Length: 444
Image 1 (cartoon, rainbow, N blue to C red):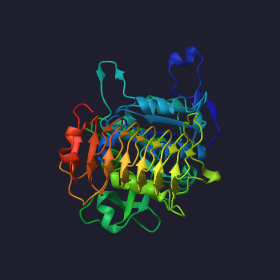
Image 2 (cartoon, helix red, strand yellow; image 1 turned 90 degrees about the vertical axis):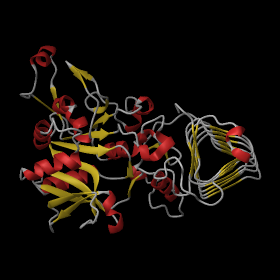
Image 3 (tube, rainbow, N blue to C red; image 1 turned 60 degrees about the vertical axis):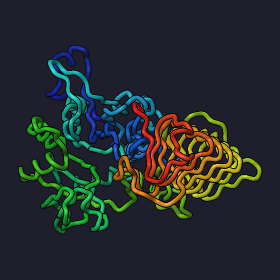
Image 4 (cartoon, rainbow, N blue to C red; image 1 turned 180 degrees about the vertical axis):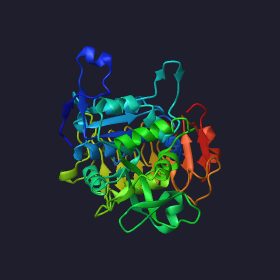
């Protein structure tokens, strides 16, 4: 897929010919959907898009599909952004960490833009792709790969493309076998023995299959282009709900590519915490250290870690520039973190730039970037209780602290709690935020 064919194309416009431009023919380009808020991550995404959330002490979630692209030989990627895109745009830049800073192709950030006579936000996954038809037409690809920017996995998209070609499919959906009791959370497909899809079920109450759609698609370009144009007036047009059923009704051949590797949709705080904790297993299910399939990211120039005398680190990931003066166990610690003397951090995710004072205890906590925790704080302790603000989000026994929040000295914070903003001691009755309680500052 590294081959670039330069050719004349009937889609050239007169202005392009006058400028002396030429069409760049790509076999397959990728369109990466990265505009979602990720509301189920609660305060972690109050100030940034879900694909920009930190993962694994070093990376951002979007690093995984971007790295998959370049490792698979896909060197042309359009990244569709919308919700709070600034930090995501800064992270992607010109694509240098992923070798996507190219004259032809490379990475291009594609936000919504004002058109002649109208302006429209992206209203669905397929609508977002439709609004960027001009970008895809410029490359005139044979195939278009549609990706989500919020999954943790390693996949060789070239192998999936080979399957698509050999199956003579018009569209191929990557599928993953999930436990049947969890299948109702996904769109599932029903296939024959050759992997040809005959039926779709969108989050069925009683699923008849456990083959879940991963939200990863390969389309033959003419099929995708025609379907997007035909369905352009459908409100909130979506691939799973509209485009796939539409082309199926037209008699197009749709196949399921059964992916066998590690894949995790980190769409909830529980799955996000679990995926990070799996990284520090003795034999990690998802290995970040494989040389033949590296995960690339934008890295800052930081000094090495410092582990003070008398401190202890066990079964943990620790980022660059971090100082540890206490004990860390079974945790993922980002870059530029300071952990005070006598402090114990267990089963937690601490993102970049966090400062934790002396003599604190943290267990099953998630601290977003820039959080400041005072001394003598207990975080994630006590018995569980349902959260009073958003019980469907703040669960799993976690204590979640949003970006740049401040926790005063000497307070105790329970489980299934959420905090965002600069808090003071008088906001903790009796010095405590009970399990299931929240402090959500307006405007944060």
